[in-house]
Length: 212
Image 1: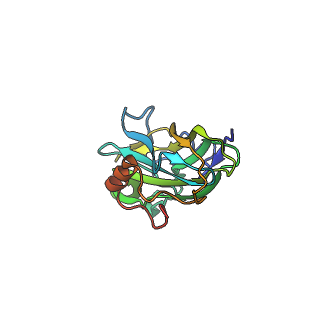
Image 2: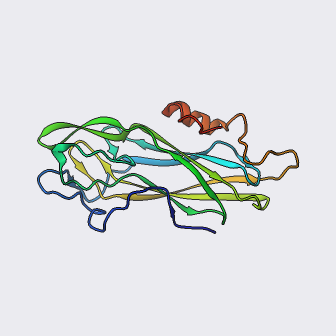
Image 3: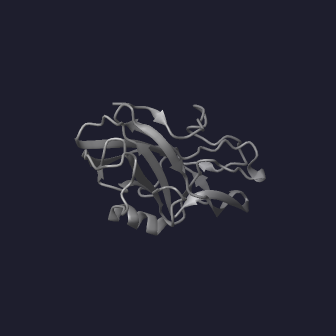
């Protein structure tokens, strides 16, 4: 199995993994986030895949009220000059060898109000229910039977006054691989699975091209 492929372009230093630098102009860092501050889930757009097909995974970050996470490409306000943000990233933890990453569609961050420097400041963040679309092309020689994809999501949860140490949450999706002489390799089914459709309906429409 192939492991360790990272879907983010940012890598935090060992120091930034545990704190956001710049004393006095950054949020304090608490020991542990409250239970349920951010919940990670993954759902499939299809439950049956053919060798060579594109597999679409909806990864959702559900934030409890008052919590947010840094987006994949953080925008640091001028008031926080020197802050080293910890972006949300997805790592391909365990897939079949030869699996190809087609694309990752990240959600648009939303402004939230924080009080890290005394005065309220608007900070672009993931909040509420954030939906990330991950598309993988299965190898053409994928064997029939049950299969899994394991993703690791890394994020840092914050509230209006402080941030918590970053977390790494592993999530697994399961599906079946079936071959068929009439299948068009690489084509997605016309109707997504209900779980994926529900996740998309809650979070808003996926970016163009996610299903096609």
